[in-house]
Amino acid sequence: MVYFCRKSMEKKLKIGVLGAGHLGMIHLKLLKEIPAYTVMGFYDPDMERSAKAQAEHSVNSFKSMKELIEHCDVVDIVTPTVTHYDCAALALRKSKHVFIEKPVTNTLGEARRLANLAREAGTIVQVGHVERFNPAFLAAKPYCGQPMFIEAHRLAQFNPRGTDVPVVLDLMIHDIDIVLNIVKANIRRISASGVAVVSDSPDIANARIEFDNGCVANLTASRISMKQMRKTRIFQRDAYIAIDFLKKKTDIIRLETIEGEPNPDTMFIDLGFGKGKKAITFEAPEVPDTNAIKMELETFADAINNNKTPIVTIDDGYKALEVAYKIIDKFHISTTLLK
Image (cartoon, rainbow, N blue to C red; front, side):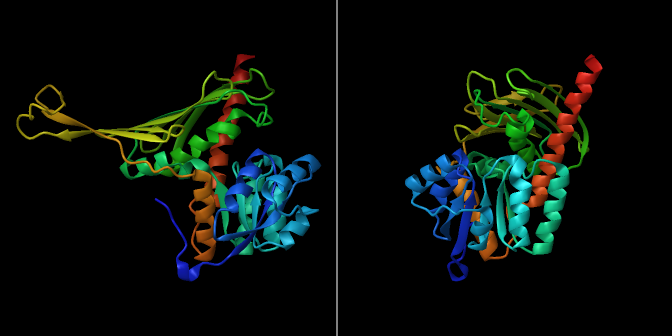
C-alpha cells in the first residue's frame, strides 16, 4: 500500500541530508526524484565524500551541520548510529522535521530523550526501518492475522561497513521491527546467543522471542555468510506465509475446510481421527516493483504535509531498539555462564 500526498495539500519541503556515505548518496539521488521535496544540499565532514556527492548529484555542500539545518524544513539523518542523537537533537531544537535511519539512536537513553524532544518540538519524526516498505512485506501483511510462529533468516556476506555494532543492531533489528509490527502482544521472554567471529562484536546471532499470546519468533542474523538471504516464514491458524525480502516475493498457503468429499482436482490434507479434510490453496500475491527507500521518504513527506502519524514512528524505533538491547544483554549472560 502506497500513501501519497493529496494534490491540494502538497507543499514543497526543503530537505537537507546529513551524511554522504553509501546510504546518504542513495537518499540524495532518490530525494531529487520526489516532487514533494526540494533538496537544499547535504553536510558531511569527510572532504572526499563531500566532493564525490557534489560531483555526482550537483547539490550544495554545506560547511556545517548547523548551517544545513538552518536552511531546511526537514533533516534527513544518514550518519553513523553513534551520531544520530546529536544530529537529531540539534534539528528538533530548531523545530525541524526529522527522518532518522535505523537504529534510531545508539542507546536507549538517547532514544528516550529524543522522543521527548520530538514531542516538545511538535514536529514529525520517522525512523528508517525500510523493510516495512518492502513490497513483498506489504503484499503479505493483509494475510497476517494472528501469527503463532515466525522464523526469520537475515544473512549477509561480510562487509566492514557496520561492524562497529553487533549484528543485532546492524541486521537483526530489521526483523525485530517487522515482528513487533505484526504480533499484537507483549513480550514474555527472550533468550539469545551470539558469537564474534571476525569483528569485536557478535557477527552471528540467534534470538527466540516469546509473546504473551503464545506466539514465538525465532530470528537468525549473520554478516559472515557465503550468500545473502532475507526470508521470513509466518505460521498461523490454517495458513503459512513466506516472504522473501531480497527477491521481493510472497507466497501464501492456506487450508480451507471442505464440506463433503473434495473435488478430484483439489489438493487436500486428511486431518484423520474423523476431523475431516482441508483443501490446500496456493496464492502468490502481486508484488509491485517499487523502491522501498523511495517509498519511505515519500510517505514521510505525506505525513508532514497532511499532519499524519508516520508509518514508522520514533516510538516504533525505540521499541525495536529496546528489544535489540535485551537480546544483546542475553549474549553477556550466556558468555558469563560459560566462564
